[in-house]
Image (cartoon, rainbow, N blue to C red):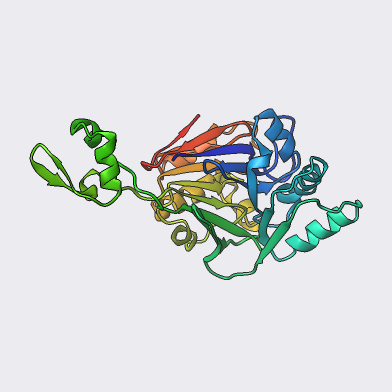
Length: 310
């Protein structure tokens, strides 16, 4: 099962006419996670025909407005549409108070169960352990407590090698026998499931929100299939990036290289830059597979380790 990453917005600080604050929806196939929820995120979902009813989990990186101001509106809309499915919100300490205050002060009482998990860790920690995926949080280095996330697929089923199935012309009954743990005979040779099984690395996606560069980040996101990393500034403005606890495109690429990830998606661009291709050019000097995030873009994260822009 391949994953789909939908970008709702990838601008920093404030929206512009055609670039919106941080927000993205990761579709795992049946279950979706909303990662950060900047102003207007639910409008972007409507425009992109993303089913917000499939969102069961919200991961908030930190409590700066461009990452959370869309959340009260989304929660209220769920209420107005009589949502009954539970929703889980994960974020730094303070996210519960933010939700309670902004929803409570408007006179709403949510019609659906909401679980809020506050994190305050100093290293990589498991925060969600579900049937088909796990979510880890890890601390970043920003002006206020900020966390990145790594979502990792759980390998809870057997994947068969389609080419071998076709080559040996296996019937449905023989495939069933293999899956039941039996040995089958093909062309006079006995085979078990291990021969026809397609082994692969679980899909994983890492989200590195606002942070200045620090070397340990490469360990936190190691071997991710895809990495989204903030790149608010270009290297020529590195002093400004350091001062404001943000990263440059070169630093994001360095993190991707150190973490040996499959592909790098850059985002959280400062509005001072009118065009974005320079971010890709700067990063590609260090890391090969670089993509630029922008509202409306989608990326396929394949189970063979590749990513591509839809």
